[in-house]
Each structure stands twice: as structure tokens, then as C-alpha cells.
Image 1 (tube, rainbow, N blue to C red):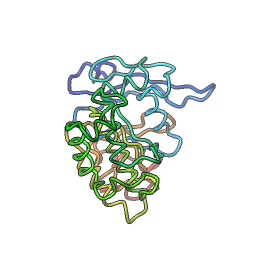
Image 2: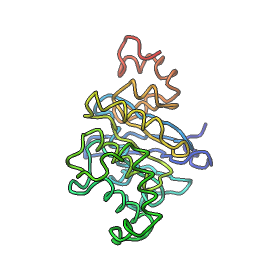
Image 3: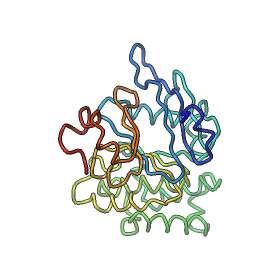
Amino acid sequence: MDLGASFMNSDVVLSCTGLVKRFGGITATDHVHLSVRRGARHALIGPNGAGKTTLINLLTGVLEPTAGRIFLQGQDISQLPPHQRVRRGLVRTFQINQLFAGLTPLQTLAMVVSQHLGMGGRWWQALGQGRDVSERCEALLAQFHLLDVMDQATDELAYGKRRLLEMAIALACEPSVLLLDEPVAGVPAGEREELLQTVAALPADVSVVLIEHDMDLVFSFADRMTVLVNGAVLTEGTPTEVAANPQVREVYLGHGDAHG
């Protein structure tokens, strides 16, 4: 298969070809080719320093590539700023929460939904009068198990609830591609199950790219996996294929039983 032409495939929603990022003499991303198909559950894994977050920052426009091109829905977005990529349907969550501490989940979602609907700064009014906004907020609060805390200040929420709110914000932007950067990182064991169930229940029409060190989550969630090592793609395949790959077992999953 010609990976360089993968963006021409109508089934591919996000792709990059020959993506390179250099910081001085360090190559953080080394000619990466990636294709994410419509509705995929695609995991991006690799040891610390493999270049996973750098790649996500390139895809979302936080970093400018040294070389290579990025395509979303068949359109070259390589030079677009992050906010324009969000408008086109490429949305991410972050490894570290980036939330409005003093707002409640309801207020936060009302603001995001209003912005997405083009209502700008009138979200306070929309929350009380805009049926579209209130219905969308209620649906998101229910979907992400936030109804019981919707009127609490965000900085008072349990950490797992904050991660759920971050995903709700991302879904409020109606993405075609959602990039999840370590969604369960730092979440206490007692709060993980609700979060894992929510990730598993994300809309089927949204393509999800997951960066995660929790291999139980990765192998239960992903239908496709790309393994990065030293900034380059080591291999790509189904979870079964990746788990059986001797190079992966050596450099990442260990010499023992990787995962069935």
C-alpha cells in the first residue's frame, strides 16, 4: 500500500506522510506515516521518549513540522493553526487537565457549546434561554456521568470527574477525530472504572486516537495500534499482531507474555 497516498482514501479521516520534527540536532519525529480510518479506535503506544506527544502536537498544530504533511478529511491542514483544526473536527484532550477551575461543569459546557454554535460570549444568556444549548449540555452531562456534580466548582471535583469533564468538552466540539492523551493518567483506582466505561462508550462515528501507558486499557479499546520507538514507527497492526511482534515485546512490552 502507498502510505504517501493514504489521504486520498475516503475511509481515512486523518493521516500524515513523512512527518518530521527536529529540535536542533534531535529528531523527535522521524518520517512518520499514519492513517486513521473512519470510526477507528487507534492506539499510539511506545516507551517514554518515543515521540508520541510530539506527534500529537504536530497533528493538532501546537508544533510546526520540519517536514511532511497532515491531512484531515482529505484536506491538507499542515499549515492551519490549532483553532482552525478544531473547527474542522480535530479535537484533543490533554495529559494534564486544562479546565476553568472556578466554573461548574454546567457552566463550562454551556460556554463551549455556545462557542461551537456561534453564540460567542452570550453563553450565560443561552444557558437560561437557549434550548439547543441547554439540551446539548444536559446530554453531555449525562453521557459523561457529571449530572451529580454539574453545579460544583471544577476545582472541587474528584480527579476522575475532571477527566470526564475534559472529554465532555472535547465531544461538545463535535469532532470527527478525537485525540485522547492518557485519559486515565493520575486517576485513582477507585475512579477508573467509570472513566474506562465512558471511553469504551464514545460515539462509534468518532475516530479515536488514544495515547496511553495502561496496556489493559489499550488492548481492550484499540482495533488498530501504531508503535513508536525513537520517533519512528516500529510497526502497526491489530492488537493481536502487535502483541505477537518480537520487536515490540523486546523494546516495549517486555520479553514475557505481552497480551494474549
